[in-house]
Image 1 (tube, one colour):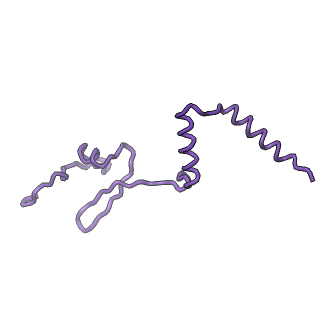
Image 2: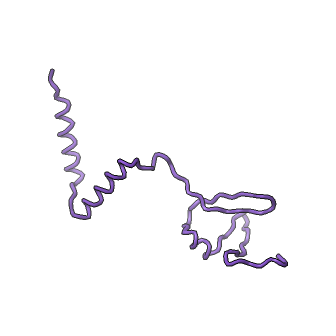
Image 3: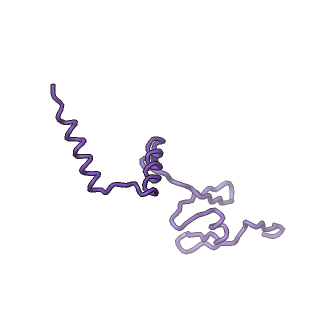
Length: 104
C-alpha cells in the first residue's frame, strides 16, 4: 500500500481458514449491522466491495391496510385496551355461527 493514504474508514482485516473476513467493530457499528446480517460481495477488477444487504421475504411485508390495523392495535394496547385470546376465539366463533345461519 505504498503511497496510499488510509482514510478513516479503511481498516486492515484478515482472511480466516474458511475464507471468513472480519469487519472492524467501528465499521460494523457505523453500518448498524448485527451478527447474522447478510452482505453482498462484488469484484470490480482486482478489488472487493462488501455491502450490507437486507433480504426481505415478500410474505413478511405488511400491506398498508395491515400496517394501519397493527398500529391501531398497538395504540389500544398501550392504553390498556385489549382482549384475551380466549375472548377473541369466543367472539370469532359467535360471529362465524351467525353467518352460517342464513335463511332463504
